[in-house]
Length: 209
Image (cartoon, rainbow, N blue to C red; front, side, top):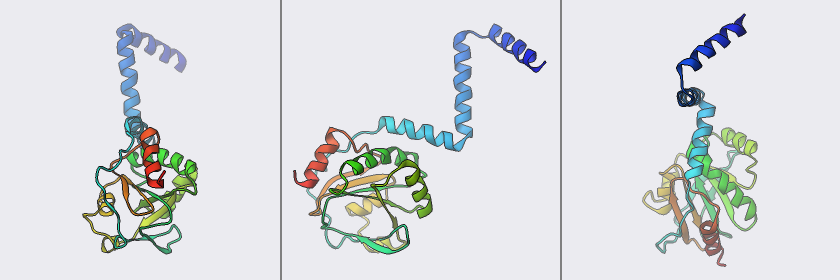
């Protein structure tokens, strides 16, 4: 009986609507569902942002992160650690939150570069998220080549807020590629796509190739 009711309702609906109207109603229904379901909404936004990401450009200034710029951080296990320069290898720093759609969009390309450059470039993700949230997200996505580190409450005491690192940490998401000698090769405020010809050029400069 219920099947007959739905069939009659559908027939009346189709009789009142043109194909274009049915399409618009369907798209409106999809939009409502996306808005009302948070995981679905976040996924759609992430995909949309990822489609619009651009590759980073080489920093147009010669700037070095010095020995005085030291970030006090925590590992996923809560151990104290620091991020300082110069370092043994170039460092790609991605700053963000796994709850942020733009961060998620950019992390996908960061992870691909991290896998490709494993052992040559240190790739770190700096976040104020709960370590368990980051660990769960990274495990689900297979981001094993990215090293997550977590900001301490007193990070501002270890780095100037108006310096390169300070600017990165005040913008979520953001990223930077810093050579082993401390030179800032790329500074990007906002999400970026770390794959492609320009990204490869930046990695080559950072590695001195």
